[in-house]
Every structure is written in structure tokens, then in C-alpha cells.
Image 1: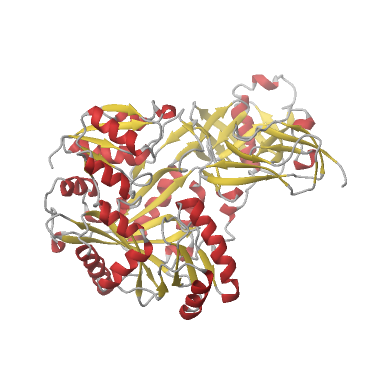
Image 2: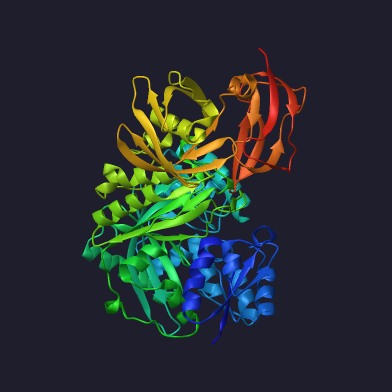
Length: 635
């Protein structure tokens, strides 16, 4: 099973991550890309690159591997990483698949079968039902047997899609109907399983490896309890809730499943932990997004291990040789706006600067277009330290030093999560974000401070205020108006020579220096550096996108009451439900947009008659593009 050329069947940061290890091992690396990403960082980083129609086109990926002389394929994670048919097709084409066997992928991909395998291996499992009879009568009877709280889950797939928590059995029929529909739409299979639910558990997973010689090890656990809609936000290793004794039990259970199923390669056995006992959740037959925290505490390269195992080598280390050093925490940087319900964002990156001193896995660069066609994760920031508190503080500092402008991100939300007392004390469970964190200011729009608005005026003006025409008379007093999102904010100040502004009953703000990417300002004598970027009339000041609308016509800056409906983000039009001349009620759905694999309804901001509709199903729209104009009226 020797090979010297590896095709990476993925994109973005994971493709670059795999390339680093592969090139360090002396392998030639083939990148793949769709037409829109032919100049993307991962495409340029390969020794060669092949264009494909889609990252989900298995036949095209295999053809690309054969045409480029690759002897192996690494799927990364996502896309086809857990597709048993793709792994089988690679083997049939004579290509080494860097991952478990097709049989193992299929076994772990079907939740009922995986749970039966775990139980056979002696792994603790929650009471449930995973039978073939799927009629409502059977499922309702089984739900009554299991009791509440009850979780309804699709037998295939993951990511929280189709899951329904039932606390009253009277709600079970509706939960079954909705779960079936979502499972069929998402995974092409409506089969469901039932399981006793745990309320507010911890989500703890164990990194495992198996080889072709029957060896198996674990690399300790990761705590992934901080989640939003079953999607991980923060991951850390080791878990602050796991004792050495519990770690040994969890690790032994995970290894038992690997050995009993003859699993080969990297995998993750996931558990729910109620503070006393742990229970099998599922097994992911691939490398995880959060694998860097395990690499940080062990000092091991998991991608290198994957490649060595795929070559037929024995595991490089035995269980007792795997180190556990310090603590690591990872935060996922997403193109989304937490203050707008985590609405996915798209656009052009105007200014990107990764933090110094942290590991940052990404495929970003200034000038890059972020589209709504792929997963919104942009980067992963990983901090390691001798203890949890050091790692936590380092990650907060790294997030504060990260610059992402042009596309709104969740940077400040992540820093707020890490700074919250419940997380800082290691007490966060899976209900943390929906519970004690729910009222955090990072989840609502925050107005700019007068000092920030004054800084924007100074930066826009430049020196020596040529835009405002200084004379020998009294310092000019002026009012400027800025738009931030859907709101407008005004600031009145007195300008002074030497790039200074005095706010009425407020601080004195001085622009000390500026470059294309940074401005140095002083607020009442305290200096600080701000990241800046410009996009037409919009000035990015750190995370604030301030558009100067002082001279804009009033009708162009009115609020929702003017009947204008604009696209909240770039994306595709799924459907249009209203046409010119139609009367609509306030809140009525006019159209549905799709971005980052999520659908977003557009609602009428007021009652009235549609006078303009610049939107068609299947079209692509820009962020803030005018889609409907409604003439307000009482209906």
C-alpha cells in the first residue's frame, strides 16, 4: 500500500491542514477545486490542482486522482469523508482511502447499528429503540416504554438535523412527523431511532486510532459541550469534568469498540456524561474539526498517523507512550452575525490578520470572496497552556487580536463565551448557550460609542481636515450621521487642528496616526490601535461597519417603515411568494433565501402593496440588494 502522491478531496483550511503533514512526509500533493475557487489558497498550495464540478462528485474526484497520478485519497472532514460508497469506489479504483474501511463507515453511519455494536463491545448505552418497524404505532409504543425525556433522531446523518426532544408523550406523533420529513430531506432516509434523553449533559468525545494489525489506542478526551443547535462552538482537551479514573474508563470503552469492530484509522467515540455516568452517543468515522486540541496536548500529528496507518504501518505509539501535557481550547470562527440570530454572512474580506502566538488553521486572505455556498466556518483558533486558565486567557487574547473585516464574524461572541464565569469555572454543559449565556450582550446589536463615531469622523476626514475647510475662525462644530446595520447613529463634535475632536460632555479623541489597515487613536489621553478597512462609503472600525450617510437622501436611509426589503446577506433565491400588485400583511413571507446551507425567510416590514419586485427564484442576490418595494397602507 505504498504511495507517493496524495489527492486531498476537500477544500479550505482542512485541505491546507492535510497538505502540511503530507508534504512534511515527502508526499506530492494534489489539490482539487471547483471553478469558483481555482485561485483559492488551497488550490494554489498543491503541487498540482485539478478542477472538478463539485466536492461531492465522487466519480470526478477518483478521475482526478487517476489523471494526476495519485495513489491515495484523503477526504478530510465533511463532504464525502463518511461516505461508504466513495470509500468503496476508491478501493475499487486501486486508490488507498485515508480512513476506515467502507464497512466500518457504513456501520458507524447508521446510528442503530452503531449503538448495537457499542453495546456488544460493553460500552454503556442509553435505553432506546432502533428497530426496523417504523410505523407510528410501534414508535409511540416504544416511546412510552422508554419514557421521557425522549430524543427522536434520524438513523443516518448528523449535525443535529431532524432531532426532536419530547418531554410530553402527547407531542410524540408531531415530533415523529417532523423528524421524518427533515431526515428524508437531509439524508434521503426517513428511518428514525428513539433514545432516552439526558437534559443538559456534557458532550465528551474520545479520540481513537486503530491499525491493520489489531492495535488500538485512545488519545484522551475532548469536551465539546458548548454547542448551538447541536453544532460545536468551543472544544477543549482534556475535559474539566473528567477525573483520571473516569478518563481511563471512557478510554477503555472507546478502545473496546474500536477493537471489536476492527476499526482502522482515526475515529471519535462520542459520549454523553451526566456528571456520574457516561453513555454512548455515536462514533464519527473520520478526523474531527477539533482534532488540533488533541494534537496540542499530545504533541502528535494525527494526519501523519492517518497516513501511516493507511500505508499498513503499525500505530507509532502504544497506549502508555501517549503523553498528556497541559490544556488546549479551540474556538471556531464563523462568518455569521450573533447579533442577528447568527445570520450567515458573505462578502469580500477587506482585512484579515491571524493572531500571533496561537495556532490558527485557516484558508483566508485579504481580498478573498466568502460565498454562501459552503460551510460558514472560516478559521479555528487553538490556544495551549500548562493549565486550563492559561489556555483560556491566551485564547481570549488571541481572539481580541484577530482582525476580520469586510465579512461579519462571531469573534466577540466567542470571546464572551470564554470569559463567562460558567465556562471559566469549567461548569458549562450543552444547555449553556441557551441558558445562562442567553442574555449576553454579544447576542444583540450594540450601538457604537460616541468615541468610536468620533474616531470614524477623524479617520474619514484625514489631516489636516481638508474636507471640512479649516480657517482661522472658531473650530468648526458639525454633526455626522452613520449607518450600522439597520440603525443610524449621530455624533456632534467640535474639530480642532492636529486631528482632534471634542465631544460635547464627552472625551477628547485624537487621531495619532493611520495606515491602510490600522489607526492609532487617543481617547482622553489613552492610546489604542484600531483595525480599519474601507469599502466605498463604509469604514470598518474593528468589527463595526460604519457607513457615512450624512449627505444621503432621507428616503435612502429610512427604516423598515419605508417598505424597502433588502437581502440580509448574499445568497440564492429559493422561492418567491409575492409579486407586483399584491397586497401583503406585515410579517408575511415574501421570499426565501438560502445561504450557508440554511434557509432565511424575507418578511414584509409593513402592510401594503408591492410596487417593485426585483427578485426571481434561482437567482443570486447581493447583501443589501433591494428586492421588494412596498407602498405602505392600512389593510
